[in-house]
Image (tube, rainbow, N blue to C red; front, side, top):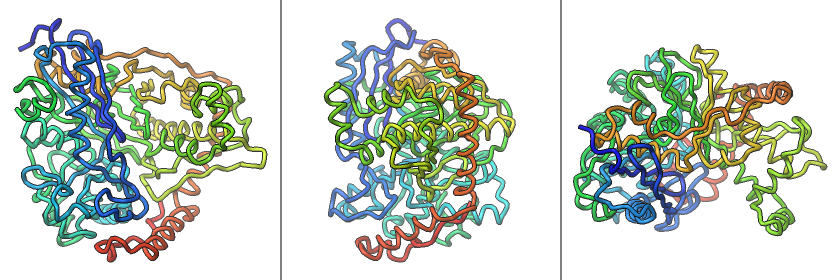
Length: 576
């Protein structure tokens, strides 16, 4: 049944790395009527726990789940107020999350960090997507899967990521068995927030397929898990088992408690949860094969549909119906993009640049972009590797680290800034070429996220990839995508394709490749590829050795988390 489109409204809520944002959207045409943002009060916890102030080892990234509920309490009512609409016209709500973000909870869905006996235990908290301390566990999963010839491994490009459910679950077991035993559900945050809205636990097919190694209706076998660790044998049955909800379907109805939080009407439709990247495809009306959507923020996720099932080395996964029904959804990504630029501005730019930016009424990012925009390709004499947060695709190795080659005493901050932007574009091209060479064509790059406002960056991406760049015009692409899913779940549109066509917002071909720049970038990309393969494929294992030394020194100097003492944290990752 379809409701009256002119009156019907939906809400999309996007839970990002640092904040959550809500947008009120009209079902008939996708018009965004009001939005609001709530910053997480605890942010990313990567140094000290908020309770007990225990110091965390390197590569940890935790969060506090109550921050997510605060988004429902604050951003949703604020968005409705900003829209100036009657909440009675809102027929559904949809949500998306960064992934893979995992929460250990009780049978009732209570996060373990909220229990007094676990409040000072790091493993009782949310493990954010960029919690990369699980690389040793991921290496063991990959080694065993290759040795056993597991059929699911090629569906993930031959490598399982340390960011995903199984590596994080194995770390939990081996480093804090007590918290592991108390964990009755190992829940994706995307599903936990729907649980809070409806009172029902429903696993979404997207994260189950991409992050949970669920292929053709099955997870890795008990025998495989037992070979990793005998106490891990029942991980699927005891921690992951749940109803699977299809994307765009109705997970349940808004509970009385959630209605009180949000100011919405009890009983409205709540869509099955989803991943921020995958849900954005509908916001760009980019469901057709060959249309790659890049959601560019702190990291970048690349997603697209394909007609045929292909094995793409280093991809994050291919899942039947993982983006939309009837097509194979492909995913790849870069672990650091905006984070890299932000880190450089925060740690590598002298004070006089801040003073110049302040005097000009600019941000430092805007000043550096302005200074670098007039450079010819290659003028700075630099080439960088975009691995400051590891490599998600195509190497799937979070022990790798950033590198800038070519610096001299004449190198300026704007030179490095541009080289880092170019490095992320080279990383995107590496991903695109992996897909094309594997028989999955890429014909268009559609960009969403805050970085699309940087015109220099966008033109560099067009020149480096040789593809036209289209722009999702919504400032809240994932939230709009979640609203579109809510519209389908609530009956406002009959299917996702119809909803995306009516509600999606995109401008085609905004940036076109400049041939001369493309030829120059071909030369730099060849140098990038040499460095990429030398440091990333086993030519020189120095990055892994440095990571291992860093962990060893940190452990020896700061033995502050006793339950980690026996963990395999001083061993280098397997060379790629």
